[in-house]
Image 1: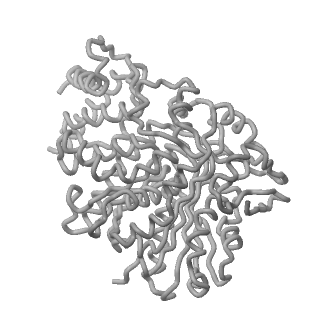
Image 2: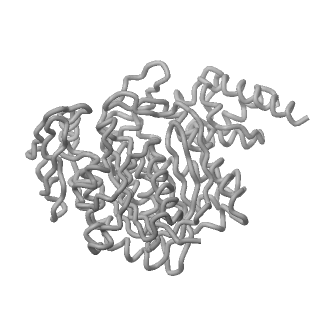
Image 3: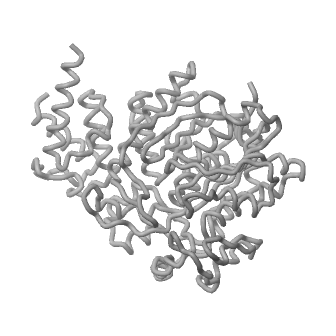
Length: 87
Length: 418
């Protein structure tokens, strides 16, 4: 899955967790915190995204991402590593 | 195998509280997402209350119920805390004096943030199971208070910190650990522990807490999963969905437990969203009742969750409780034990819920005044006389003798029964 598709996944899950975000035009520089998601919301969005990607990494490895674009890039890099590792 | 566990137990959550929703509004926090935090009230420590008063008031009913011979068999007093006011002298020494215990006794203090209570419990269990002193009892006192000002957001610290104030409480859990586990019989050896170094939250300077709330939550979630997987490796046939009738977890705030429960139920039990909701209501909610009314009592939190589960669950037959503790820094453990009808009846004699009902609810003005005056007992206070006229209504709420801090004289703390 490419970075853009992962970005879409994150925004979909964000809308599930915070329904008022439906219809919001997400930018890669948007931060989940800035959009009104608290710590619990953010952890849930990340958990749901990892599940969609069947990516099993510690949640704490995702905390450095400052915005949705960085999070998508981080997950993309991690999923590439896990695919390589399984060969 | 030797039976071992909690013979008697009590929670003491002070004399004053605030409504957390009112506090959050007073602080101008974003209330739209507040309800998912599952917080109601928190205990507030008044200046004449400290970890010793909380601990003694929790332990006194347990000690008073013992015969002189039984009391003499208390051979270890373990304090579990992150709220110490001395780097060398353990609070166990004060507990020993104030409860009038036998001097042939080990006295020491344990630390690893919110994991300390379970660290103490497992230490006590190992002592009993070793049978180096058959018939001996351990008095375990987990006691923590919040009385600090947040460090302003700087590099590595986050503004999200502000929602930690509404969740930070004060309280103590006292437990007698012995061969006669009337309340909670621990499954010996059934433990999955998981720890590593992470800088999530800490208390690096006097009266200050620092850290990253996001990282702490994520670390808690990771550890909950990993600790359970280790438990499952050690306990043949252990099944997250069916082995435990209740789950009791370290509760910084209810929402965090809900998130952790959802994570492990999805990843490990592969449960559907609907099943997870129902499971949370049935197996987890009973353990949250006290935590939602007292707030995060750190090292004592998991023990309070266990007490809440036993008080509020249904124990017509003996049932197994799965327990999880997490302490920042970090260390975590998933373990289990069994409680029954007799244990519930004995625990209910402490009337913990009624005690919480009696607390004086402070107004926001009184609460702000408290924050301004709390520095009278700041860390390192050499001499102070405590003002008993501050929130005087709180001092008599329980209708029985309660220990309060009277004076600090050359760093030594002196107490009075009121």
